Length: 181
Length: 171
Image 1: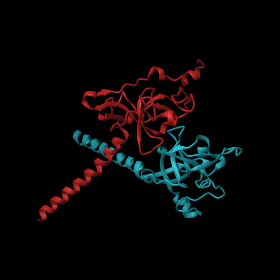
Image 2: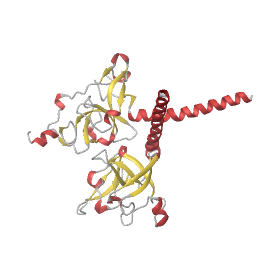
Image 3: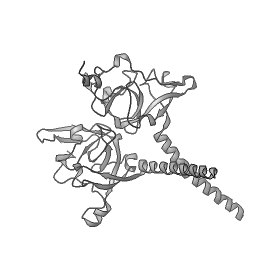
Image 4: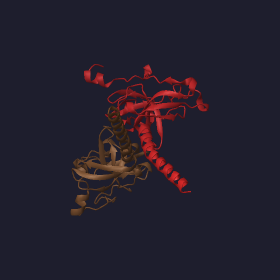
């Protein structure tokens, strides 16, 4: 009897010790390095969820890449939704701070992206709730950079950073600085 | 000899990672000590002041009007700002421009809050950059400097009260 009690105690102690190591390490890893997430909705078709509602892709979100809030035009990023803080949205970066972007359905036809903000859009124009409805997004809401599609297996691929040519900024920050149109 | 050194090194690295992760979790989900500088929250928080922030109310979405929060600056994500929440989503805010010349109203959109410093003459806040998304809020300040509290008339809890002379919400 005493022996079995000792065994339980030892087991419990080991469990607690492992628990207090494993949980913080796992949480920190998921917060700072990478995590996976399921994409819902049609706003990024055809890059993500091409099959419509019956399939949903699982993507790898790289937190480490955006730790200094550095993104490029064309990157697919996930953000905390400015309209609903409980929700994350996944969009493509169209313009960075200082760019002048031609909008599609925003209240102003041309928008200059303010400092510390980015302009994000879904690939599926017209079916996406993006900067065209809520305006430029603060970089502080940036969550991660989506780099790979992990699931389903036949769609396993790297997500390329491409900017549709018709969505190029009208004028970029560098052009502004150099004074050429 | 070599094995001992290697073992020690590995143990040290392991402990560093472990405690680093615990610290990260604590600062991210529970709260921590923050040093506030800048004049925008005077007289509630004096220029270099040490305050205690908790992040639980952000995670449970229980930020209220009158709370003092720490948020990421909308124009520079690497710097933080410390302001008082004046309005929550859907509130109508009286916006007089910093010069005090124009008066107008604006509604706080969904998912946003309206932040203002207590030092209205010397604060860059929502009057300047508009409503701030809730997602930028890092934590709520609930306690400031022990030593000031012990010697001055400071209160143990920063009062989430209507500021005197500024009927700025509930319009």
